[in-house]
Length: 573
Image (cartoon, rainbow, N blue to C red; front, side):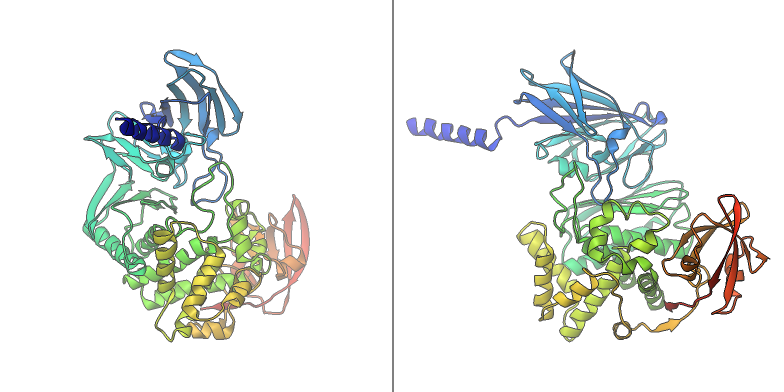
């Protein structure tokens, strides 16, 4: 008997030390009775409290979109109750509320959330539907992100569907559960009367949840999604989930995507399924966000998980997470048979052309582009092309060049697929940790059979490097001289038509326009005394290369005149 009591005491001591004995209970409730006003009533019931103080926080960003978005700006009327008694809750910083919980085992926190941003990163509700990213709207308890939670939905009057990767509780589709806050925050919810398509692939359940007034051939869409799933599975060797949801929203001006561990959010226009070209573009978006299921969400660069929801999560490795994924999205759609060889090579040549002709490539390295995503990539201005380079696009070019290096050095026995698969198996499946650049370099060196440090020093950690002619030829791309009037690179000017006038929106560094002193927000009224009225490209391109061109401008309501010498430029095709 003494031995039994001793065992019980040891077990209890272990539970107390490990924090298991007095685990908090969390139940969220989202009430959409006022959805037509974009308002959601939120409550958070916290039970089994064993602390004198709790700090409640709302994330300042959503993983996958590297900018502080300050979701707390949408929160109103925060209150706290112990039973029916209103208790003090104090806001201590932009996203943090403090509650004194001395002698309180259970409290209820309530607030209203204004949801009127229909993007993949935010929340939106009206009488038709709701799309919720829980990281935007649901608070977590500081120091307790590992606590499981239950989520109860009270839908708007006529809604009958809910789509989410969160597990259902019993027979009630409106009650869901999450094992911890990270899972909850990473699991969007679509509610309303949207279209759904269910299918199985390799013993895994899949759902396509379509919101928007669009019609599509369901059988074709499902079969095409299966082809993309198969190509991703071929790269990594397995499907790492039991259930996956594709959220697909369609409305005028819609665009963008965001990855999650067991789902992805996609936005596209209302004509997505009406033309071959728009549908192919959509499938490329599907391939990109779905590939993230492995690359970023499981095979993750440090420090992208576990997340710090309070601050920026800096990394120099987004060129792997996003750039490599951008390389694979077109490659996978090509392998799946959606793109012809000509379409694929033309699309990729466009990426190389961007790198060659973006002045910011001479200023910002890929590593810097990744690190500064928080302040630059998502906040572009008229000078961005002169100061930055996209870690998506240049990252995809570096992925292609690395693919060539692997193929060349292994005599065609290995390719980038083998690197991605070995990294996934080692750092997610075996070690379950984020990888560093040193880890990545080690795996590349093992695969290639030599030290690849000079390659990455040149193309990732230094600015200005671009593929040279020989590297392009190895990849089957020729460099030829062309002019492209749609981008007006010869002048260095990008324009937009505004009320019959031609407005300068940006000027490329060291271009003819830059050197002449043409500025963004100037209005071009004449070229060589000929009136410009929505015909800037044709007038400019009619001037001989090397000739001096007189630009008449309106700047801050007065006329001025500058002279620029027309230049030519290189393009890849």
